[in-house]
Image (cartoon, rainbow, N blue to C red; front, top):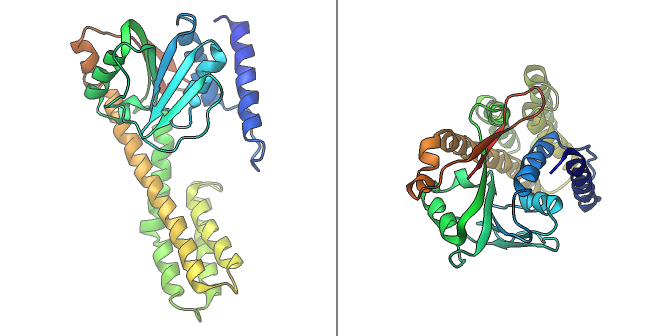
Length: 299
C-alpha cells in the first residue's frame, strides 16, 4: 500500500473509531500507538490475495480485525478470543468468544492467512503454532505482532505497578480507611483527610495524574460523595476500587510474562520451525524517535 492510500485508510479508520465512541466523555486525538500498528498491518495486508479469509487470534474487541478491514475491505475476517461475549462486529468481521487459541474449531486449510496482535505470546505458543498451521492453507501468510520486554509499553506498566503497590502495600490506603470506617458512626472526615494527604503525596512523588494520585483521589471523592449514604454501600465501593487495582496488578504480571515469552524468540517460534515455517521478515513497530514497542513477525 502506498503512502497516499495508507493515509486515506488511516483517516477513515480513525474517524470510524471516534464515531463508535461518540458518547464518551473523554475526547482524544489520533492514538499514535494505534497508528504505528495500522501502518505495519496495512503493509502486511497488501500482500494478501483478493477476498482472503483471515483468522485473528486473541482478537479481544476486534481492533486488529477492524484495522485489516479498513486497509483491505475485500477481506473476510474471523476473530476468536477466550473471553465471552465479544462486542458486536461490523460487516465483514465475525467475532467468536469462548474459543481457545490452542484448540481452534475450524477445519484443516480453512484460512488464507492468520494474524495476532498481542495475543499469541499469552498462550501455549507450541500448541497454538500447530493449530495455526493446521487451519491455514499451505504457504499462507502468518503475521504475529508481539510485545517487547525492553519496550516502552512494559516500562510504563511497571511504573504503574510500582505506584499501585506504593498505595496498597507501603501506604496501606484501603486497610487504613476501612479501619477508620469500622461502623456507621465512624468519623469520615478523618478518612477523607488521610486520602487527601496521600493523594498529595502521590502527586509529589509520581506526578499528578499518576495512579499513585489517582487511587487515593478516587477514595477521597468516594468518601465525600457517600456522606449520608449507607455504610455498606460505601464499603462496597471502596472494595471495588481496591479490587480494580488488584486486577491491574494481575494484568501487568500477565503482560510481563508475555513479554518474556516473546523475547525468547527461539522458543516462541519452535512450533513453526518444527514444520518448516521460518520468519520471512520482522518489522519493528515504534513511535517516532522512540524504541520499538512491538515487532511484527511475518512468516
